[in-house]
Length: 135
Image (tube, rainbow, N blue to C red; front, top):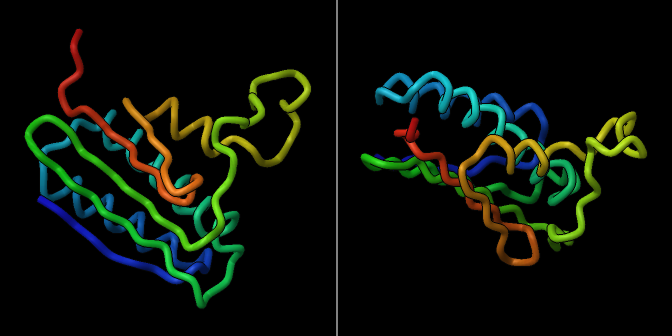
């Protein structure tokens, strides 16, 4: 199963991403824990792409692809921004950063997904969620 779509870079369009994750959950038997992780990580990726990548420019698009097979769910998000240095993100759990209002998105995405990769200077992210966790 695969779902691909694009949205303009407006915060109001986050509901489109939320609906896509809900539809995927309804159409397939995804574990509720995987669903929760998928929802939060996808929303963080979408918000980062809209806000930081495309700088809320409604002329710029964010492209999404959700691809599901028997073992995993792969989510890709691509914005039209210049990217960022994903290898140098401040730790939001550090006492220095704990009160910062932003800076938690990539941290959450990496903690909630089973695998995360950045390409195109950080303007493309791929998150993998394994459907069957080993005990």
